[in-house]
Amino acid sequence: MTFTPRTWVVGEVVTAALMNQEIRDQFNSMFSAWTSYTPTWSATTNPVLNNGTLLGRYMKWGRSVLCEIHLTTGSSTTYGSGNYNWSLPVQGASSGIAQIGHAQLLTTSNRWSGQIVIGSGATNCSAFFPLTSTNTRVDFMTPTVPETLASGHQVRLTFMYEAAS
Image 1 (cartoon, rainbow, N blue to C red):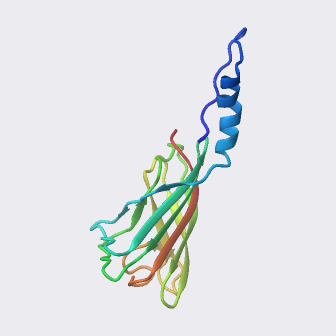
Image 2: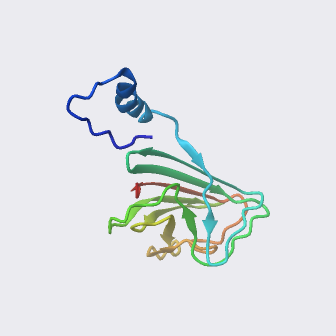
């Protein structure tokens, strides 16, 4: 991962090791593989994944974070109650600005398009979808919004935000 470059001092001897650390290693980190993480899926009453899958991965360049979260519900997944949230790989910056990303819900017969919202300084994100197929005002994703979740349904979240550090 990229980091803050060093402050050079007048008369300092520049070595190969310093050049590798300050230039080569930072440059290489911009092309490295994504980092996997296990997001937490939560709500007022937390859902239980059981035999479903929940995967996350991210790439961090300086303080910019690009992240993907994929949830596939299983036959024994329970959905809890209340608004859904997913944990971020690193805390968001306290910038006073909310970040927006893209959300999809794939069900047996529908593909819903929604948004991700990450508040200033947040440690998690929330998905928002249309209330129904005819009411396109958006609200928090819940076990029944935009439709009742069932085994095999997928939630895909993709977003970019500024990290706290």
